[in-house]
Length: 225
Image (cartoon, rainbow, N blue to C red):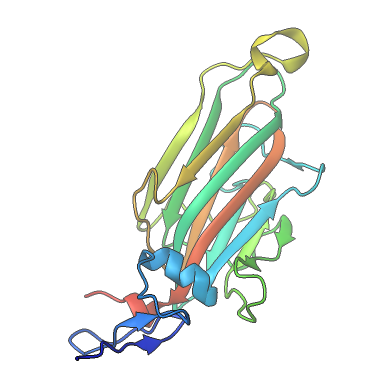
């Protein structure tokens, strides 16, 4: 009888193009069937950062301001980030105005962003791995170098054309809650450092929460010609 063998390894192994690599599985004897991004999260390469925690929201920038996003992730050289999810909840929006949510990937990073620094947390609680990236929320006016420069693109847009003040209409008893997921919505965004992930939550005078997760690996693991 032929016995099928494989390498037991929870963290994925990357091999240069053209090199053989062993089939990998978990400690129970099951061959891994998770997609690559979830496998990386399991292996300690997934991170999350929060803008606002508990019942304390952050104050958004107000009207769209290119150099003052409400979430900014600086990605240093030799690090690659793949965003996996974005969740936005508005607590307040101010007076009636257009609401716009924009997520942007760029090769224009800024390691000296001014605003509220937040510490990325590993999605695999118990992992000793820490992020190479710098996360900042509620970025100050002119608090970063405008990421709408160099090589960049917007990969997610959402919002509402008009929003009435919560105190004066029944309309806003509906939650103001949006989600983006690489698995459900796409596309697969890949940002090599130095670069940035910037998210804008524009309204007349918004407050709320934002939760952003990503996978982070050395650029040499995913480099392309």
